[in-house]
Amino acid sequence: MRFHDDDHVYRLRLAYAAVGLGLIALVLSMQEPSVFPITFLAADLLLGVVFWRRWRRPRRSR
Image 1 (cartoon, rainbow, N blue to C red):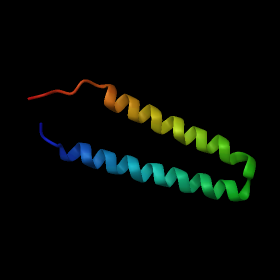
Image 2 (cartoon, rainbow, N blue to C red):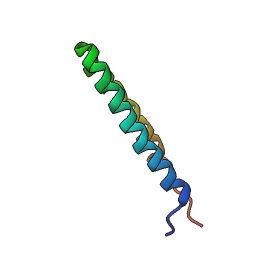
Image 3 (cartoon, rainbow, N blue to C red):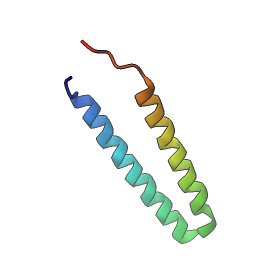
Image 4 (cartoon, rainbow, N blue to C red):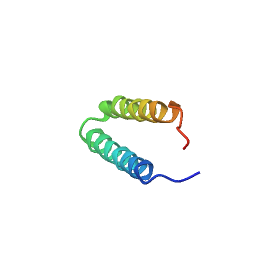
């Protein structure tokens, strides 16, 4: 089983996106505290959907 470079890059981008969404949620929560839970839940759902769609696909072995 080989570790693909594009898979690694994808995971790295996903991690950066998660951190970015977290920072945006933090900044929004400082300005408007009632917005934070909604933003956090939206980001969490988005990441969950991305992860689920990514790893649900059958892997092709060569």
